[in-house]
Image (cartoon, rainbow, N blue to C red; front, side, top):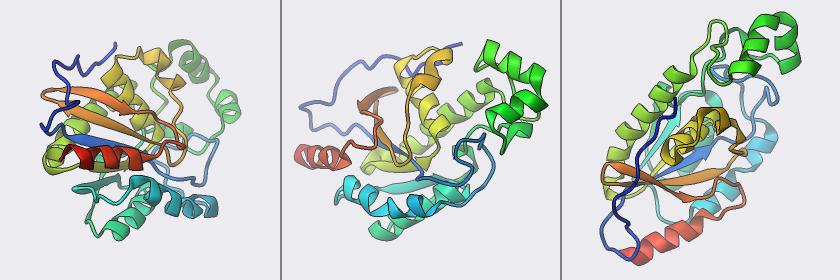
Length: 228
């Protein structure tokens, strides 16, 4: 089932009206890369920590009105460095976690195929609608993502909100906003440190910036300042 945020009825372009913005940022590189890592809690790698200055530079000079993050170490550590830079309090949230892969946590796909052959076959056949054993269903995850976005967006009324989260959360958010079929959401690439900008227009949502780590968020900041 495709969950969608609906079609915007108006645009904020060329208008002084505030359209609340939520920047979704994926944490930097962490341990367990290449394995199922949902609710597992590895620390950032040295490469991940080395990416902090570039991310802060891309965010520009304007501080967010709030900084939210997943309560897992890889997201919380990424967000903490940004919060320290801007002097903005950090707000961890369990609901911003990646999907829970249950008994597959920490395993490679080959290990999953070897240890859970029937589940692996069903996963490949029914993706993303087969629940990993002991894990979270896609429908549960999708509901968690959309509910949390609606809740957090209320903080964006007086500026943009930064949300440091995980690749799966960002993919589902983009799928919800753009109406991407569930079985194609995995095609959305979200690199470590990549960011997208979502804009709430009334009760609807729009997608502002591409989800690529090379995109300069400073350009969004500059445009935002010009509208004031």
